[in-house]
Amino acid sequence: MARTPSLERRVLDVLWRGDCLSVRDVHAIVGADLAYTTIATVLDRLHAKGQVTRHKHGVAWVYKAARTRDEEIASEVAKMMQRADGAAEPLLVAFLDQVEAADPSALDRLEALLNERKARR
Amino acid sequence: MARTPSLERRVLDVLWRGDCLSVRDVHAIVGADLAYTTIATVLDRLHAKGQVTRHKHGVAWVYKAARTRDEEIASEVAKMMQRADGAAEPLLVAFLDQVEAADPSALDRLEALLNERKARR
DNA sequence: GCCCCTCTACGACACAATGTCGTAGGTTGA
DNA sequence: TCAACCTACGACATTGTGTCGTAGAGGGGC
Image (cartoon, rainbow over all chains, first blue to last red; front, side):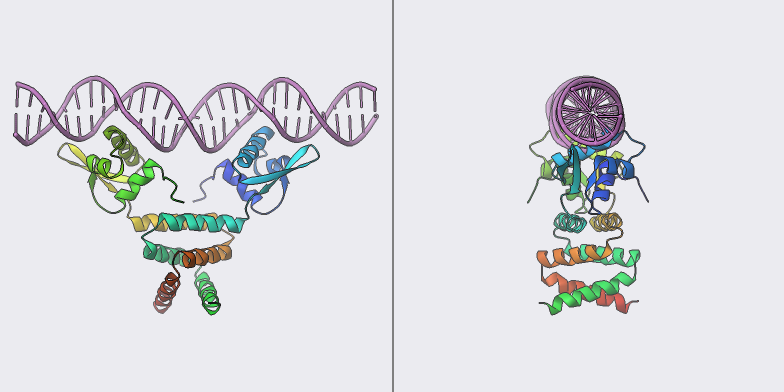
């Protein structure tokens, strides 16, 4: 548990909170023990990959996640879904298992969302 | 869509079908255009990482996925869940979105599974 | 007007994972 | 006995990532 995520991931996690952050900000939050340029490089690469956007604020760049956390989650789910293609049932079961394990009350929440969705149909 | 998964992934996908396969089998299925030793190496590395098991059959190794496809899916889901920690609601929503998009009738299936689970509680 | 401080741009290096083979030997059935 | 097949091992290229250092540009304060 609590395996250290990669530096890139940690940086993204911070940006997914939704704020616009300068290199200095990110450096302070996620890597005060690392060189400033290390963080700058990571952000630059993330930008090159299109995972974050940035705009100039004076001489400095200010970064922002290209997608919201929710969009990110949705895309992860979609990817998993596709990967599990042809095993829809096990995926549903696994999902319920995990939801229940993480927080039993979430099952009720899920049910509510499900009904809501059906009503809308 | 249909981005080519890595070679390792393709090999695993084949093994997750549950069969015990020799290098030759896998080579025939997934990489007839590649060198035989390429597949052998991939399987060997997968074994080193503990993702597959193997036993001798005569002089040759026969490989088998270390975990079933379902276990694999469950672990993927768990990992995602952990990553989305603190965003449980968006995850549930994203999940429903994706399930519905992939196959509307799966929602009913999900509901059935949910009820079944509640009854068992 | 000039200087210091901070930022970026760029490049460098190490390391691990992965794709991809080739070769050297061992084993075995015909 | 010999050809065919299998493994063991090592090799090489590429790519992604972590991690910095240096050089040069631009702004704010004196």
